[in-house]
Length: 89
Image (tube, rainbow, N blue to C red; front, top):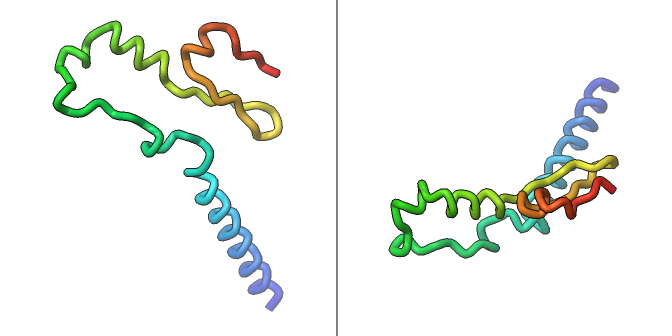
């Protein structure tokens, strides 16, 4: 009976953690597509895929998360990271 109770407690703890993770995953991160403005297909050009300036623009806008002690993180872009404005504190 004690083993069954332990298993139920573990399962319950797992489900609570899973629920917490799924509820946090899409909120407050601004990483989901609802915050983005995409180029209409009619305005896309094949040359954009290989254009060095376009590739650099896309790379500089890429989101970066830098882990910090205690489980938090710094959310920034490659451009900000390269500018030296981001500090470890």
